[in-house]
Image (spheres, rainbow, N blue to C red):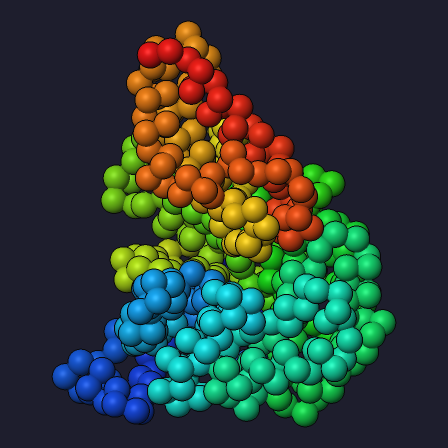
Length: 453
């Protein structure tokens, strides 16, 4: 898809084929929320919503992802979901037109569905739409009985008697990642029957694999109501044997008329915290726009996008994102070109492509894999990883790196404890060679420690 065709498709966001609805209706809440929706405090709902021929009910272009809820320490000192904050966040989201909520049995160690279900159950069922997944990652779960158990447990946790959007979770590399997990064992037959009975309203899958596995699932004889892919302006142009570009996947789905749900619109936060030189370029264009808002507008401007997921931990994240989509101002041709140039520039910076999904965790040796990667990337993007010892800022950067890593990652969880056992490798949806990246961080730490001040 060339640039001119991209702009043409963006213009179609206002066409009937993918109607945008500026919802003016007002939801009514129950369970002690009357004040929130009283006449003195009416909801402000300018959220852009979309409908498709296969999905008649309007869906908010901003969707709420339940992977990164706020946490708090309990009486035993363990981090648990802060239910009070979750409910405050969801109350604000509901008030401002967000009606799509995504979770999974594996998020937050199994606690995400329950937290979301408790918060949303205070509202009329028709006022929100829930998406959850069949997270049967363990081969012992590749059977109908295990699938039914997980599916029914999700219903119970979410406190619903039907699921709006049910996904086969995280299809991986190779044809068998789909065929053996879901097709040959009768699981897909079971789910299609549940859809027929109305307990599943829409059936789809989320994808983290290669081109072969994508086409195998897409062309299997089953009606897919929607598909969830990783899409952002960086992945739009990056293509490899491990993962087809977002542009390729989007185009294949568009040809088939399948609505697209977007995950990782900020690439695990990387597009919200660009390096200093790229930040300066963004500010030259518009000093008021954040890097995240640029990324969200790029994704939302594509007409086949149904909703864009964001795991909003803090109220500041939520309010900013709602502002971007209320209503969405489509990206211009010039801005689209600028973001593509930004993506090309980012390829010159060898950051670790971790999205902090934490599928690799827990590490059997206690290493905080995403924590180490996040710290390294942060220092790299801030210019605190000098190219050589001859760099002008070498001494200063060395001291800062060694001093701050202990504040960011517990000493027992640092990269130096990685044994390269490979336990994490099959779990990573980004196909990162985690042990090799840990060696890369360790080599830098070793160099910094051995260099005399």
